[in-house]
Length: 245
Image (tube, rainbow, N blue to C red; front, side, top):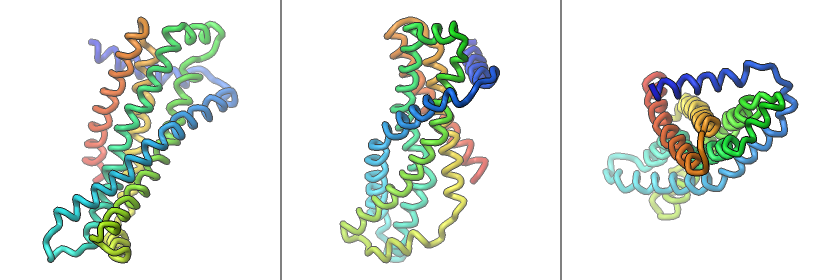
């Protein structure tokens, strides 16, 4: 019953964001604030993870492809497809689930415990629209951008790793990147990015919005939201792969 209750309240929260007509211009400032918080605040961790993710992937691929029959350009192809299909959208979003998700849950939880949400509702403000919607919309815009940036940095990190270690020449790596490229892989990665962005923003928002108790319960809600978000990301990853690939 607890799971059904959570699912029902979660769906009602999403419905509540659109149930009351609001002037969206009022929320523009909050939306831009969330874009900065979720995007700029997570930029450095995405840059570091993406670069070393591509570099390690390239070196380990070169270590495993020891057969002289396999051309060196295959290293670049494997790194490219691995980064685009899985590492950039899935791994980065799992990390963002911890960074962004815990921030959203703790922020809304603190507002709930300190009765700020109750005060806004007394003033006649639809708190679901004012507090939850800007976070979800900002995540849907900013996180896919971070995923695209992660793709570029992952491929670039792999290039620097194999060229710097003398495994491949720049021409060989570039030929491998262009060889047998499937544009649909980018579309598939963006589909995953938008799906994961909604999960990362909406689930922590639910746990933070409905938290009850004090600071201890805020910490528990934040931890639970991150765990469930990661599980749902992996589950959605499997579903999308089974449907689209």
